[in-house]
Image (tube, rainbow, N blue to C red; front, side, top):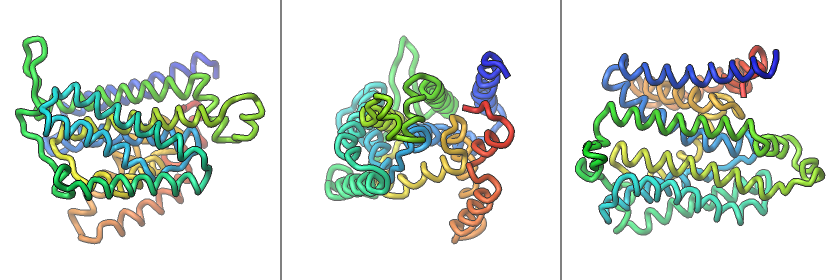
Length: 321
């Protein structure tokens, strides 16, 4: 297969995915319409996580703090200061980026299991901060944004972020932007260096690359996408609470990426979609739904040891990025 053929297939796969998601909004019932809006935002979060764990080989258990930074950065800006939603989104995204860069300066002094533990400790500290300052954050009760606060005028047109159709298309735009960014990154020279670090960091250093610099870049980009997802989530759904900063929101993106395919661009959306509906369906039929989720995940891992997209790439379509 020539390079041109591979590029065409990659474009067809990812472009087709975006077109399918666009078309679904006209076919889905109201309930699933809202679900898919949430899934696309959470898949953006998972793509940010995948940059770090899938392409750089850094396992983090602290990404909830970046997602929460976006949530609180945007949500509190709108709630307390009546910020314009667009400005709030920029602030939330920037909060995720800046926090990731600052944490990276410390956490990247460690490697392997130590890095995972350090990121988890920082995330738990961030979670406790949201509880400690209960007078401001309202803790688990959270903050609810009014419909008026989530609307604004743009070129004579009123933008209402509570409108389901608009919200869906904005979520699709966010997801598409993240998809293009990840595709460009992994196919660029920087992406090749990140993959080299994942495969053999010492040899990458011997070739003259500053591995710590590239890992900090990967962590910062990961924080940016995570923060953007958090900011979009609070603006679309109007709620931010401490539960979003808890440890499960660091574990969720790991499960989504493992299920969909580590180190694949389409893996996060596949994993997020399947796990979201697996939990929804199980919850409707039994209270101990996580047992069903666990069993299904074990079976999927047995049949798809590299995740769904990763296994497809390993067995049939080796051109999937």
